[in-house]
Length: 207
Image 1 (cartoon, rainbow, N blue to C red):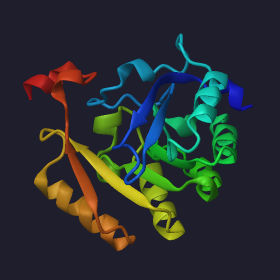
Image 2 (cartoon, rainbow, N blue to C red; image 1 turned 90 degrees about the vertical axis):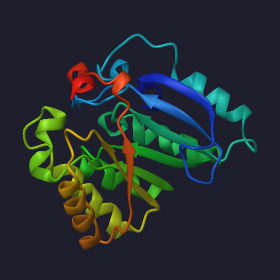
Image 3 (tube, rainbow, N blue to C red; image 1 turned 180 degrees about the vertical axis):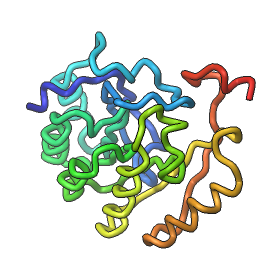
Image 4 (cartoon, helix red, strand yellow; image 1 turned 120 degrees about the vertical axis):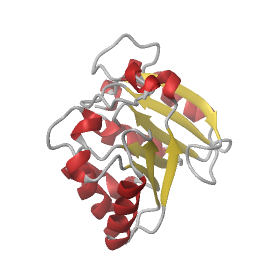
């Protein structure tokens, strides 16, 4: 099943995508949301031509044993693909730690993956009721906050981050988000500024 993983991109070396570890990043193809400030528009379609196959990635990783510490699955939304859990198992069998970047779209899938994850970067975009104005999907604010609770209870090493465009996230909402995270046991929110030049909604450039 792992060979069915659809891969939209690959970074062979990074020191910033898994805190404290030297890693490679596999960018999984496909995401059901269309977040206005998304800067990975090419990864959004579920199926697209790719220069990478999972067998190629495994061969690369086998040659990097002892040189890299970890593999990070990013996207797109990695948990959108059922093949992800099989790929994670193969990575762990090679002796690598596993990191996951996720928007928290699929809580039940995340729950099944947690025992094989060494670190998670979770995107929280807004208070639950304000998600649709960013993602374009009604009701999309429920699942990410469920994932935050799941991760907090699991004690999995975690970074929660929010990409901020000032027209979409006010100071008042940032305060609400931090308070809500603290109530479920997450003390820190990493706020990163939106890169207006690469957003899929170009109207954000003028806001």
